[in-house]
Length: 212
Image 1 (cartoon, helix red, strand yellow):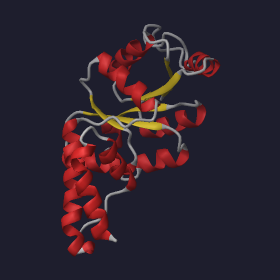
Image 2 (image 1 turned 120 degrees about the horizontal axis):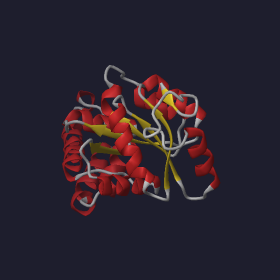
Image 3 (image 1 turned 60 degrees about the vertical axis):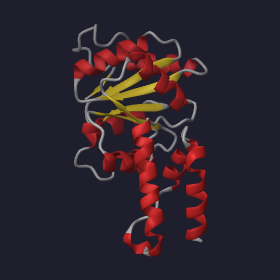
Image 4 (image 1 turned 30 degrees about the vertical axis):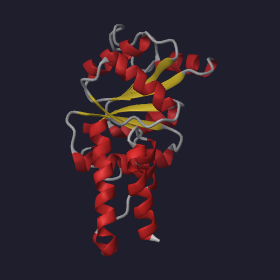
C-alpha cells in the first residue's frame, strides 16, 4: 500500500506527518529534495524516514511497499528521487525503464543487499543514478541523496571497476561486434565522470576510434 493521510490505522510514530502535508511542504520550499521510499520492510522505512526528518532540505513525500504501488505514488506525488529496495525489482525485466518512462525526471537510487557485477552494470545501463548498500551510514545516505539530486552519479570504486571492465570487454570485441552489445551512453558518462576518468581517458578515446 501507499502510506499517507489515507491510512490512519498506522501508528503515529511511523507517520510523523502525512504524505499530503510533506508533499505540500516540499512544493512550498524551493530547493527541498522530495523523496519516495519504496521498500517492502516497514521497519526499514521507519528508520530511513527518521534519518531524513533531521534534514531541512529533504522531505519524504510518500512511501510504497510494492513496485505497483510505487508507480501509483509517483503518479500522485511529485518527487525528485526514489529510494528503491533492489528486491522489489526481482522478476521484473523492465521495472526501471517503465518507471523512467512514466516520469523521466526522477532519479533512482537502488539499495542492494550485496554487490554483483552483472547486476550492477545492468542497473547503471538502465538509468539508475546510484547503487548503495542497505547498511549505508546515515551521513553517507544523506550525502548520496544530495549529490544525486544535484545531477551527479553515485558510484563506488568497485562499481567503477566493473563498468570499466565492461568497456574493455567491448573494446576487445570490436573485431567481432556482434559478439557483445555496446555500452550505453549512460555507462560512458559514468566512466568519464568517475574519479578515475583521467586514467581511462586513453582507453576511451582509442576504443572510440576503433569503433568508427
